[in-house]
Image (tube, rainbow, N blue to C red):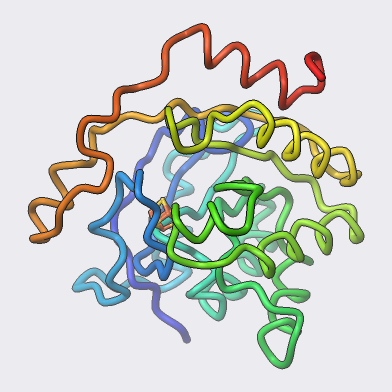
Length: 244
Ligand code: SF4
């Protein structure tokens, strides 16, 4: 039995996947997104460890609210860092006929070795993924997150090849991710994929800045304001191919 390193649980999530959902936030992330509002999830260690059955028994208390579309979403941090637990959780969730969703940035993805075999297995039990495009430009991705995006883009291509439904989400940060030409490149990439069910803009906010300070780190986006409505609409149109 594998135990999850849990960060927190939200029992009524309405934005992280279809319908109303039970959201499990796991610990651990190796990206360092400048806009991260969950810096307290980065450390993989947790005092709160739970088994798949404990999570599912708890989640099922809210089942009557899920309707035909809802279910459970595992988010983070980066949930794919705990892939052994995810396989166990989702395998059992499917036995209980629960809809399963992963909210990931794809950082651990590799097409090599044992990890990929595990990912293939996990996809058998996964109904949908919410995947972030942090930045389409490789160098700006590194500047924004601390790591290159090659394996992440490879994950998008793999998910398209197996026709696994995804929602794509782009955090819109003024001066960082709102360049129209870059957004057009993101749109061009999206058009190469056959499995995209939804594209969402997530407007940047600085509500997690205090967590950086609490952890003794300087918040990298000090002074950056939330995007205005006009630029959100513009970015949304570009990503949906309505402006080219
Ligand atoms: S992937 Fe998510 S948890 Fe990890 S640093 Fe980026 S925003 Fe934060």
